[in-house]
Length: 542
Figure 1 (spheres, one colour):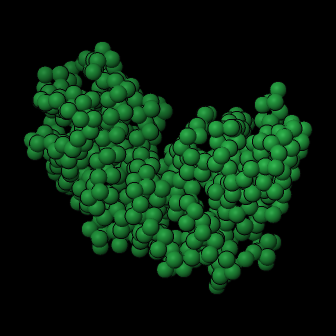
Figure 2 (cartoon, rainbow, N blue to C red):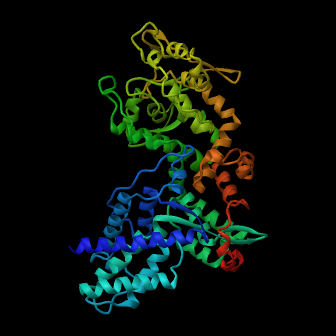
Figure 3 (spheres, one colour):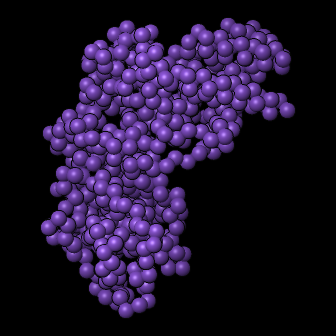
């Protein structure tokens, strides 16, 4: 009964917190972004330590404009999700205040069997600053201490009270959501306050909550100056933790979360397994990070490189004639392998295929959306796919079946838009293995896009390498990801300066990141409702 009562009390307190923040949104809070599962886990690990377990389920996000990050600004929390966050909060608070962890707390109570408001305030202020990503107000501290006091008194247990107070902070909207607050910036303009800037930077660069130094820089107002901002950006980017942040971005952009639902026909492809799927995802992330960060390479080469990383699972899937001795090792495919960049890695080929066969249309649509920011409209509900799906009929190759299907004027425009890309990738089956024949016929890998003719994946990779839409799309999606907005709604002018610096650097990812967050308009924000602006502090006052 004791656990149930705590959860109920936390729920009641958190519900009040959500209600009160609906009032604040009209004044200074201009954006709320729900933490993703990984952001939540990373934040808890950084605040309390990696030994604290996050035991619970998270509500799924959705993909908006090609990015799950964009949905965090529009998704609320359902009653089921609310209950889940409540249980998570209590579980974490229970561990933090348990006997194994108490030595790490910032103070020891006068008595473990009765309230100690001074000690409680010290602990909750310390953790509250990291959880809320800003200092707690006096009222917030007082409220949490009073709640802790009441439970400690009724339970004759200081740590039971502290557990409840800490759980109330963990469940509050100030932690579960990334609150972005606007303040006057002069000339009738508004900009994010220092703590909102720190939060946006940290979750972009490190996929986690701001560390102590970044919060201190925010407190001092350093992030409101060009020099102070540059100092912190350089520090964040020089840290190995930049890898964590960029893995999160590319995992989202490349839609690698789709591997959670990928399945293959076990009769046709008995070698495919969850182990290969996990390895394929890791291969792509390692390839991208090696090019973008370790090698500081030209991001256009992501479309053409034959360099990758393999383990035993992937060596078998790629049918390589040797054994991989280590868990992961660098590898470069031969020039005649047909491989060209991430498009021909098992991850992309398997994700955008059917369980038992490849799909030029799925692959083409994915490339257009992910790399060129040109989404393909969903097909009409009454479209007849029987010709495409008839693999036992007279039309032996998927090219022949797609051409017959595209004779329908309703279907032609979309298929002519994406199929040439997918057909050039038909040299690989649904699990990414190389092939040259389909149903006894030689596969035609030729394609023509925008008047440019090429053959196979290598030709496609070079076409995308040279297409300025690819690098513009990458810049657009970094911008949209960092701000939690729909990439389709982002005008080119929003990231024009960053994209130019990206190009001037030879399309280096670090240059794109740095120029993006240091752009004078990056932290600009819409003005809050006029009724509360008269009392809002300015950036210069912080």
